[in-house]
Image (cartoon, rainbow, N blue to C red; front, side):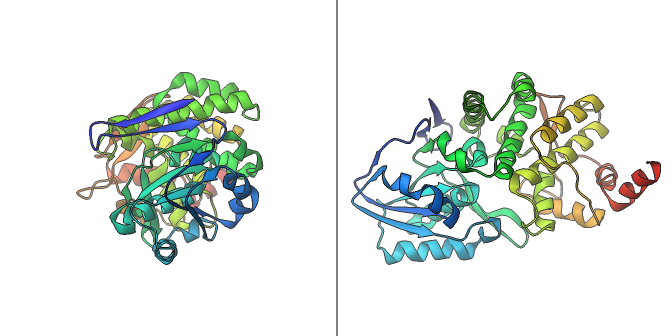
Length: 358
């Protein structure tokens, strides 16, 4: 299965997302694989059997969102310089979303830009992070605030890599799948409600549909000036959750799941979604063992962190909200009091009130 990415409206860049068994990849240039110890131990031997090139190097970086920093990117760059890579050289991002984001960003920086390909090994990176050219790192102010739009030369999605994926990581990837369905495709959402994703055929269908939806959006809007922002449903809230917990408590997909619950609460407050739909989305997240609760200790502090979001402008926060299931709206003029009212429903006082009622 091949899903084309065709960015004719911007840079006239075209590449393919290949969903199949990883083929033999032959390159007449220097290649550096960027990975982490976890993926390396599980899958590097398989990848090395598939790579043919003039010179091959491996850079292993620490595993985890906490290492998605400029310091790690500088470490990768230093390795590339030490191996004397040139502008024709290629990087291979071999891992999950953190590896993909950092490798792509490094590729955009090295000698003002060299090629890279994505070989994602987690469900989250296969259905979302590896497609579309978003690269970057985190800093103390928030997630992915330093980065670039930089497209890969190709993406190779091999479902067999998911066999060793921990259950929690698998569930985190499903959050991004739910995001796509709620925003764009009610029939797809209904399919997810009934699907058994431990079945390989069903999982392949889900990966294919998610990539197709992502490709359609990216083809229309590479630089996120319009509809691509819709892919951030759940992320505006989720990024604050990650920041508040120092990227150590929740996997990215878990934070997005919480973010979707919060976004749905705001959508309900604005009359965009029914209570039944709110509960239905929550039930789907629960089905796949995703967290749906979060305790906000300081509503004002949580609210202030929204302004570090990349979508905020002119002191206004752009919220991506569902318009029922299968539709979406972007709202930038929501009264702060309304937003804080919703946040307060996730606060300590709200939890105390709920316990008293119980």
